[in-house]
Image (cartoon, rainbow over all chains, first blue to last red; front, side, top):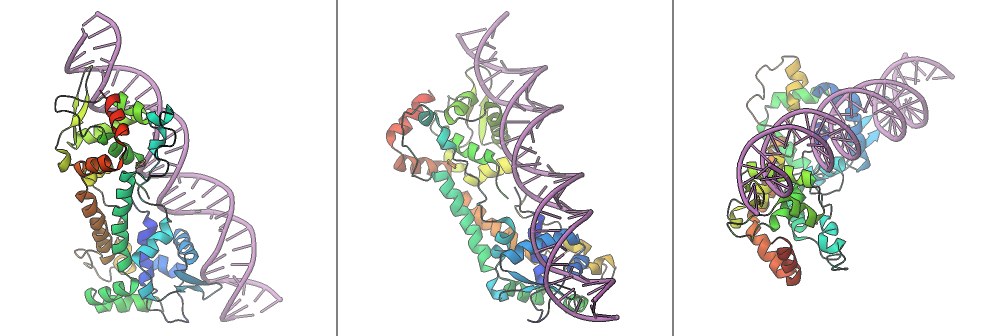
Length: 162
Length: 162
DNA sequence: TAATCGTCGATTAAATTAATCCATGATTAA
DNA sequence: TTAATCATGGATTAATTTAATCGACGATTA
Ligand code: FES
Ligand code: FES
């Protein structure tokens, strides 16, 4: 049970897009090289981010990606959802459907409408996580990095991408 | 990204162990049959629950499983951890280790000690979920079911297992 | 002593994830 | 106008994980 590495690739890569000017963009090649990632695989990641409306693409030479929304409107959760899709973490296979009293037709219309308490708890738990993740935005992340990272590192990265 | 079905199997199966007397136990065969599950696979599930100290086993004919702890001391989270292990949901592969400035030895001892902000946020988010899941116990679940399930259904299940 | 039940390890099958390859189309610069 | 650069998408492959089965073993009871 774990998130795919795409999530780590996505979040780390997006960091470098936060401060790029409206007109500019950064290509997959540079992002992959700087971070030591597979170029082709990272392009799949950005395909998903683009489809979710988080980034927009600039085709052709000198092209690349830029943020499509304000960094304060892009949350960690948005990114995760773009990568992992909308299915809940807990997979309820509705095992009650095969319970003895249903197989035996003892109780024909039982349970069909009510949601299983166990599933409900799991959904609520996931919601807790989602709320937290939704409260952390790329803008917040940028501020945090500015505070905690040596400025020469930030400058070096910025220099690499221009 | 999802929990294995074992979690659903485990939580649903444990329901039927909550009210069994200290001396008694329920076998895999009955649990599997009642719920329409694979007998051998469910036994793997209970192997994990036993290893985690959630249930204890009674070998031999007329044997089976019973709870090893008070239902109010067994939380949803305990069960999930017994099944899924202790690894966090978000897999941080430490991609910073391969960043350009590290490969180029520009900054030899960079980052080794600091924990990545992104990873930190993910860990905190998971903690939110964990807290919620830890607050829901089998004892609570039992009460909830008593309130929301038709009593004849509960009785029928109880009858099946005795 | 034979049938029942949990335990463990090996095995298999299916599904998912990680990653690569290739073909295509847009864009810019020579 | 052409060649190089870049995103896009589909197909493919390899590795890993999950789901499920099988068979052998030891404990227990009737
Ligand atoms: S039926 Fe799926 S969790 Fe209860
Ligand atoms: S290095 Fe793994 S999340 Fe930052």
